[in-house]
Image (tube, rainbow, N blue to C red; front, top):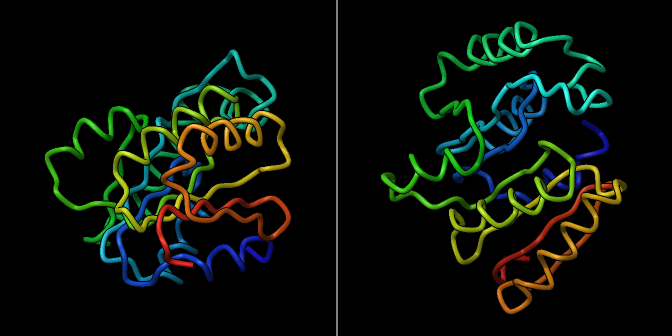
Length: 181
């Protein structure tokens, strides 16, 4: 939590946001408690990925799909009485299909899912489609070369839509789409 304190202070209170990559819901609780969101979407496939044995969801923590389903059930249990929390078991693409029916745009997003380059870049591209013009896209693990490269490539493509960018709390990134900093 301490390593994300500055990032949390940059996200708007009483707003609409999402976390991509929820795992056990620990950071989602901090987001919820500190930001008091109007609405918060928790997006994660909770899918065991054997091709990523060094990742939590591929063998280093969860050992099989049953473990991932248990994590999903645990997150549901934590947030089941929160009417302003919506849990989406899937990817940002499948979320976007459902989300298009809802007119609410996101004020902020926090990305901490699969840290492979193509997944991070995909999360950035798709979540931007859900953002307000003044939105904030943030994420974790900028020390990873794949995450860093994906963020840089996204910013190169979206340069005209990005007003500011900063690294905080050692390895957290914040991309400001509007003049909100």
